[in-house]
Length: 135
Ligand SMILES: [Zn+2]
Image (cartoon, rainbow, N blue to C red; front, side, top):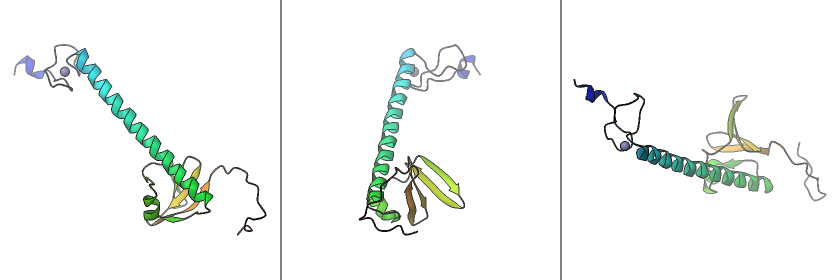
């Protein structure tokens, strides 16, 4: 085996790398900056997509709460545009799956979400027109 065959290839263009450090990944500055530019761009787009989805999810949950809805079937929630992958946290709480989207939390089963509520409820004045508390 010739010595040259041990050299790696540029991960961008595939050219055989020049002699140098063994951890070298790029054949040139051009390939290196092309790699970082593309990866950075894809990351920014991905990040933006996730942030938008989480914000949309929060809007949907907030609207449900405003309408007094604390439980909804998964297909119905999906139809509203809810993205089940875009949440801000997940915990197993007492055998239940608790999900959070910023300040709103809910439990989820295979068919529905329930106990939808704000974790830091703004103090709300009870109005005379409100139904009496159920619990
Ligand atoms: Zn290259």
